[in-house]
Length: 427
Image 1 (cartoon, rainbow, N blue to C red):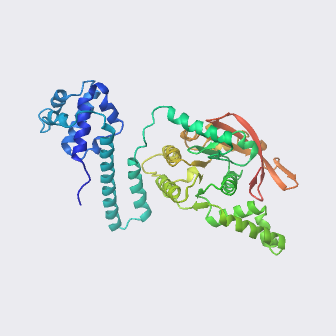
Image 2 (cartoon, helix red, strand yellow):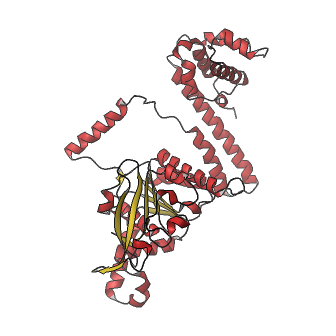
Image 3 (tube, one colour):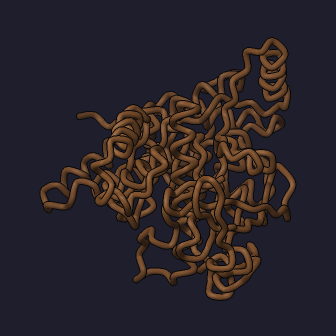
């Protein structure tokens, strides 16, 4: 099988860089290309010589290139290559050809390595993660839109749709009115929820996921590293049916109980919610998000929770590992255009604080940097018993929340949830 390459396109790119020095053509090409995108060694040598000249602020032309190449066998090539093109107008076309051939070589190489790993009886998921991690580096570039006009056209189209009543929002609603007034979960953002143990951050995330799937018909992917699918399903059934699952066994014979649970089960079957419960790395999360995005069009991803995502502890400290995972999750949100609801633990000081702050997220300062919105919550007065109240829905707990970061809105804002723990419902 022939190795994907295009000698003419490689020469054309180099020629454009040589004859287009006054237009800074090399700098344009350098934004898209690396030395490994050239297949032929002599072309790679010339490209590296161009890099060295630019780093030394020396003009790039046939003579300076020949001097930089020294006594190598490629010294004579710049003179010959410079005559391959007459204009630089087709530069991006030539670059696209190089990048396509480079991607094909990467695919060829990765699948060859995958075959070798299969022979070594490596696990299929490990092989897929390794392949996708490398292929992600070679995603085709988007059409360049450097001028702000392209974005203004899109915004104007949205305004026109709003005026005509045809606009459909493409952001995630929590469907908790007092919270939706304060935050807007755009696609491509990371929404971090942090709380001490048993304050209900998992329940809140499931509430948002169910409402997003049922009311907005947005497909959802949940990574639950603490609970199996059966337990998640039970929690959802309890919330949908407003049934205390702890009392099901003693009340299941009551017709009203059985009917509510059946109706909730029938509704849950129709919701576009998918779950994953075994994660080996953040690379697998990235791979799964991409796969579910392509297959089901997911818009909301829930990760429960950050500090449980595995990393290579032999190569990095816990803080570095959590920072790496947090940064990769942010990149996944941007690349796949999904909203990520990321749950996080608080450190000891935050867990015992009546009003935890954004600086009390556990293990890494990178978490608050990478997220777009950060919501911290705890029982009122940091005491579940004193926060307990009753109304016509039953027993609830008052849970204070604090929006410590809100990239597109007002931060340092406080509010209060009613958390009906017996149902797993937030208001």
